[in-house]
Image 1: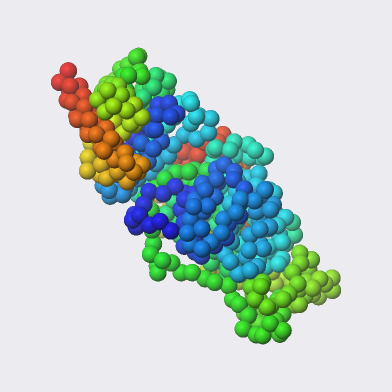
Image 2: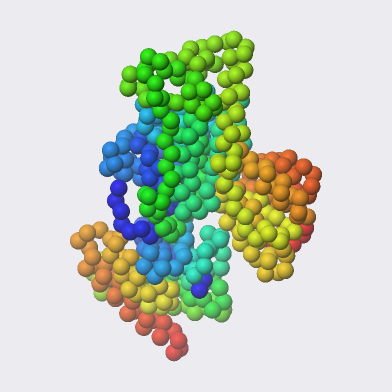
Length: 186
Length: 380
């Protein structure tokens, strides 16, 4: 297994933390090799924010994502910049709460889900949109096991927010699975 | 120290901080600068918990002065910075070299000169790390290529500085400093820890720079504040520590200081070889660039090109024996660097004309890609 994953959106959406949690799920709990990198500097504040994770069964030589298998886009700007950069056979997961112009990418599955809206209404707090996104990512792609992701989330979130975050993860997981199934039947 | 599990996802800077504490670091003084700041942040949290001290000084010069002072009291000490701060610390690195004060200086390289690009990697300080301070002086420069390696190599940095009483420069780059990788934290028992040799004589008999009281190269070092009173200076000095300009004494001091590197060479040289056994073309790389080099070499093998990688984790003393050995059996050595071509000159010198040496440079604030190296491998 060798998977490149890019999480992209706007600074403040919690995508850097999401990247770290995804990497910990893959590396610490699923036992794969893993590398996580992220955008720094002016880029990371307010503008486009980006976290990247490489998951592999073997040692990973080069740490940068060059041709992602999975792309999460949570803003229009991120979608315009990264939405088309996906490997043939890959998956683009689009948060259509924030993205109105949905890309169509030849050879890749574009799966849409109202991630931020789900966080706001189904979970009750917009701040957990990143954890809903992680759930959706696991549901739609299976890059890590749900058990590993659950443990990784619980190890990182502030004390007292475990229940809220587990709810966000489980709702995301279910919706992600549905969205993927919906995509495959259409 | 907080211990979650043995397997952790760690940032390079975090591994540098935690590895240093595992090596025995108990005093850190620094002034924050991107991309090294996480080292200071981490140590501000960890050191008080292990009975150590963290202090944010008013600037970089004060920071290195503080660690030299702390080390003189017998405490393992370190500072961390990036290019602009590393330039400021140069004079004091020379003081640490002549006064023989063990200390570790971390430079997480970013694009220079001057303030350059704070958030992007570079490898343009490799010559400065060796020759940044004036005068002939001993210094060892280590350069990790992964987060896990950062943890274990910083331990070596402390060991070398303690064993030889020299400043050791730990040269990281923004790529390694900021990326996160899985690290299996070694048990403390698995790490070899070296402490400086201390005098066994009575305080009144102590000659602070008498190497013959040690192994002939490194004098035993007394902790300030324990009754062993001695004079310390950046001027050339005799065995008592007092200044001298007597020609034979000046000569003996400079030669002894510099001889540390020759004596230490074997034990401080860390080089990994990947697929070099049957290689007829080699890549010489270090730091983040060695990662691209490893990928390029494997990709080349898949295309039927017999490529191998020489990964240098010790940059100074330059691993010339390794390079010469490879040079005598390959058609060419490609040297990718994120600078205008600095260590390539050392590779050329060490190759002694036995093979073609090709410089590959990149200075646009992006890491050299595996494809860039692969293209060069195909063209040779």
